[in-house]
Length: 344
Figure 1 (cartoon, rainbow, N blue to C red):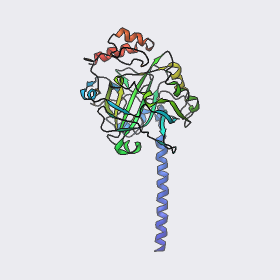
Figure 2 (cartoon, rainbow, N blue to C red):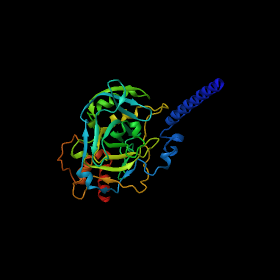
Figure 3 (cartoon, helix red, strand yellow):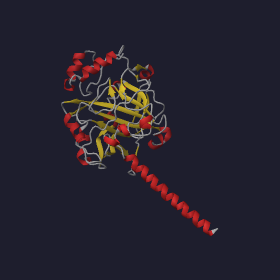
Figure 4 (cartoon, helix red, strand yellow):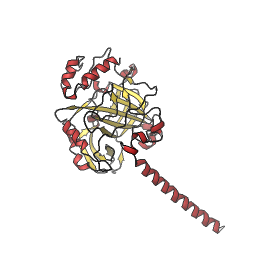
């Protein structure tokens, strides 16, 4: 019996050793993905390859859902300054998260609800996607047009208790997406962020405390500008591409200058290369519907104005005015105006 016990202990030790090695292998394997070459999106496996509700997508051919308009999104804690924040270059993107007093990265008391969401969702982190030039960079497209930058604010369903537990649940995540367009002058609100980039040019470098910003800095002005959005059911846009995301992509965008965009492009990935083009190609809808909270048949068109420009709140349906406001975008705004009218 004594020999049997020794054998059992040895076996248990061996199994645990193998399990630890296997887990370590899985952890390393999970990090072996990129946006180019053999580890790029076309070679991402599992759900990324076979899923039928993948993201991002081209936001077009929308269906107006009046209930989304009648029940707007509710934001809690979005105006709080990011006093205890952590900005990280993880080699794939630039991620901003919030820390508890103990120093552990965690979701803060900021949350969203309403707007057709299935519950209350706590903020976990935000991150960015951008291009090598300003002709592209966003993950989602709007009427087949791309943007130089897109930010994703990731939230998890409160009932699951954490991002990790919610990530694979069908109703686990809610992500807000905001596009950025190019303007000549720096976005002064955004400068507090880009001024930190020198500290995080290499992967795993960290900068702390963006006290000049709040989560509201990364979405259109709360109120009328956040009531108009695209909504669909999709996935995470990085491995393992879990189909657990309720996507809300705002129709209105924010502004950034070319100089500020160059700060993003000065970052480096894990291979010592410029961290650019960190976006997944758009995915097939496979029969999914793109819902919207706006109806251009009875609401005047007011796409994407710079929120710092003082305009009448009702905005405009004049395509010449749109084109004048966005002259630096090479007629991009005019194209989007036309396509939005054609998609009705």
